[in-house]
Length: 278
Image 1 (cartoon, rainbow, N blue to C red):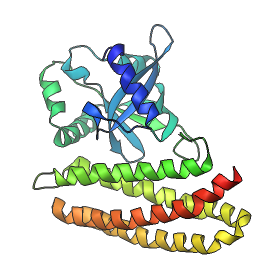
Image 2: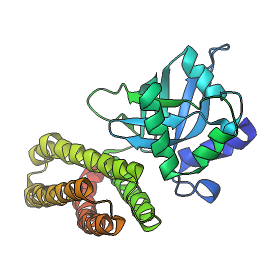
Image 3: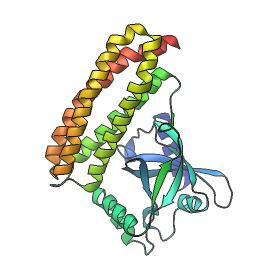
Image 4: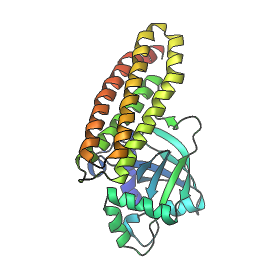
């Protein structure tokens, strides 16, 4: 896309931590900063993505053009990139998928959005699918926040946002559960498990050491982690045994209600502690 289109999108994305209005409202979007193949200068491009466990997938469709997009040609020359998810910023390395893996993942993308097939029909080139693997050590990257209290809210809002997208996809789904929607749910479950594990093993012990009066709240939060973990496992089990989106939607709604109550309580109890310390 031309820069005069991209720049307002980039500005809104950064100002609102990935929450978009207008044409891109509700879209899974990230900012991809590549290094120019010829110039060596950085170029930032808004790109749609697909969750895929510990990596994300981007598709070099160029709206069906016969020419690869500039960002893809930059990746071929220099595969290390910067990714902005709205919540996190991290360095990543691109892997160019080929053969059966590329075809399978492109088919999964088409199942989620038929527009990808339309783009492929418009061109004779095989539209590339690229996996972006985070190079961040010990976590998902740098949180886009200016304080620890704000960071808690930013991460929580990312989980809320993803659940909203998943619930919308389930409500708009067909009579069967699509493969990409199933992966979206499983990726969310994986991220939530990692987040709660990090809190239990690192954040909460730190808070208990410096704020002993928070012990009752931390005890409750740990207990809620256990209850939410049960709901997550039940959702995983449902995803493994059914293709009925209505059944999955019921499990997602149960998880959403429990998680929203948990996140709200955590913010009420912990954010003031960090704000006071700051």
